[in-house]
Image (cartoon, rainbow, N blue to C red; front, side, top):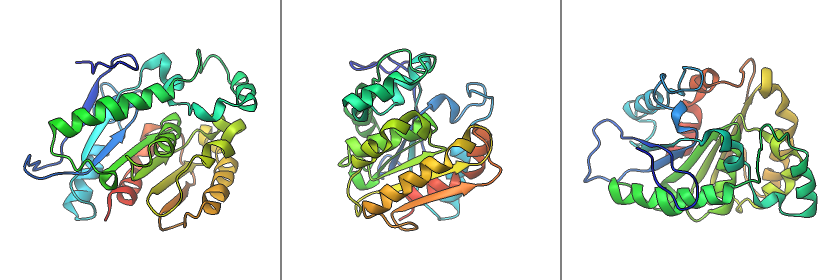
Length: 260
């Protein structure tokens, strides 16, 4: 059943509960984008899921992270870029110029990520916190995605630092914000209260990302984040831009974000 919204088109929202879920015990929550690619191979874009449920179950079993709930919010198909492209950095005249340079095949209309985030934080999150046994505080709420989903995860943390404790940005599609990358990262909250995870591969689309990630790393370090503590960037030689690649390493951002 589609989750209704006053801000964006309705779409499914999947909820994964950890083994042994107990309604009397509160759990941290990880919100993830592109929900149709997370759990069911029959729905996944390439027929391969992230394997996030399997990875998190193993981490919980091994005592690496506490039990947690995963909320998978589906993308809206042709509106995906509109909803995932960080909106505020493009508001300036320079940003508008950078926006005009984006291929309309990918971005058929104006960015609408502010509305998408309002959907997440004013509609989805309150429903999840009301319906399930969650720890609703910022310290126990995380967000993660890949490619454009990595960008919107970072933007969510920038726009709602009081709601999210960490963002997992996997194979972040930095070229989409090449013209406004410094403006985007200026929005980031000061270090000390959040965790930032970034990674990239070296093959296919991911081969474009390293110089942008290096620029981002400089800005993040300048903001006071410490590599290996509240921020990590990983390079995965040989990895491409696919659910299969993310499946092989999803345990790494899960551990970084959810471990105590």
